[in-house]
Amino acid sequence: MKETSTYGAALADEKKVLETELESVGRRNASNPADWEAVPQETGQESDPNDRADLMEHLGDNTAILNDLEIRYNIVLAALDRIEKGTYGICEVGGEEIEEARLAADPAAATCKAHMNA
Ligand SMILES: [Zn+2]
Image (cartoon, rainbow, N blue to C red):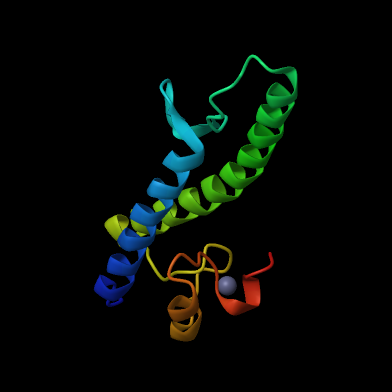
């Protein structure tokens, strides 16, 4: 069994950071906690049509940021889940052990170097 405590701590830290970042641009979907929705940034003057356009622009920005954060967040959650199940550090494609160097570079890695682009 792989020593996972260091990676587990790194993943838990990253999860916290990602949650903070997600909450700054979005909110959790009440009916699906794994899903996040972008929220517009407050401008304080939503009645002005020009500001409304700005608002939509902000919402577009937030959606792109949120999508990236959400993808990473779910990768981190999946890695934490693998630690729970005792399958952490096993390549999801080929079933071999993931290199220590790869896990050190990305504790959420789900594949070995050979399969990282599979
Ligand atoms: Zn592999």
